[in-house]
Length: 245
Image (cartoon, rainbow, N blue to C red; front, side, top):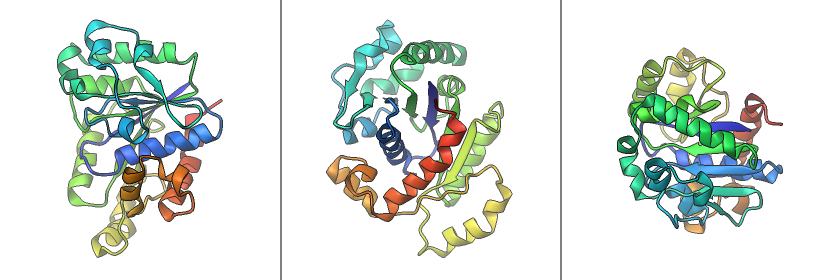
């Protein structure tokens, strides 16, 4: 089993949209997938129709089995470990970076019997506990919008998480709006300073809003639209680095 964390310090960069669409694409290929929603907003859980029936705090605070929180979705082979507002106190429930890494590693080891891929939708926070979660993952996927705040957030993450090995680190450009000269100029000129970025881009699209209305991944509901094709290309580029069996 492989574990992919989708993380960004800045919100509003398409993190959750990325999570649900990649999960749906993996499941379509017959890979048993679990979306572990750790964001208190629970957007991934909501989109996939698996709003929390139990507070995930029971796992972090009371050491209850993680399997108690997993729900099936309408998409075959795609399950969700739902998030809820109790995760706002996540950093208070886990003592340290080391403790977080150990807890997540143990949970992932148990999940390996049922899933081929676990995708973690991480909250936009930088704490020792969140760093511990990321250290327990095989790969870290980082959506970066071509805006000053998003790029600055990426630079902060890269500097603070200097422990990440090159093969773990998978940043990519997201929400690029070709109508904005600044976006296009950054990709053409400034992106050269970041050779670690994947070559696949996700364009800004109104289809992301329609996905929220439909409460289904866009690759499932409207696979022909450009946004869906962008995510298909991202999955194709990402899959070899996951070494899925």
